[in-house]
Length: 264
Picture 1 (spheres, rainbow, N blue to C red):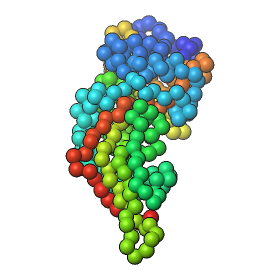
Picture 2: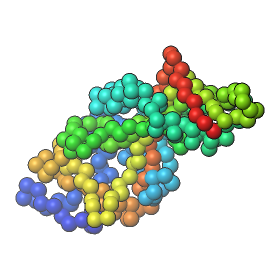
Picture 3: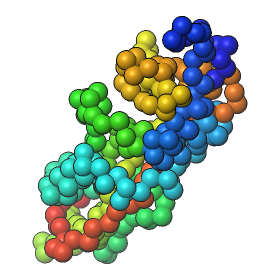
Picture 4: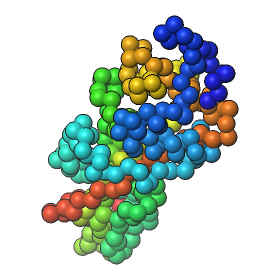
């Protein structure tokens, strides 16, 4: 962002320009928010782009083990595993749709799975998701590296297993299939962008480059930063690229395979 684009701010009796947002990753690092800094540095370095799905995805910065070191994320993860969300009716509908889309319904058993080394490729085959970070958590939760990096994000679930035709004794045609799920994979996905609904401008906290503090309000001191600051920076440069963030994938082999049947 160009300082000249913003009105001067008065602080402690002196006039100073609003914080140059390219300094924010440095402040993050001073707070040990390493992943938040890495993702923002990627945004500053990537080509100008305001459509996250058309950007250069991040696949090597965020790790599931790191995410799960934060209780608010682990609670959601533990709940979706405990509830076996891949077995509910909504998941089964998604599974059937995925199998049809991949042309896996045939006269013989077919294996299906996921490439844990290419998350963007398998993202469309996810069969369930859960959100991490509700309104109250976003408004009043801890300011930490997870929030700096991902804020509100989702866990997505993919599956590995087999689909087989069920023998039909009354005719030779196949009218039913059996799905056996032997393994699941869970990963995090987030859209790293600074877009807003019309007329809105999300506040991103107050950042103070002098003492490297970060707060939610002007009482923290420092400068109030909003989404529009990043959009304005992008207009003045040829960089500033929105993108999708993918973590690595955490796999769980099911001790007892999950099964269900459906009509063709």
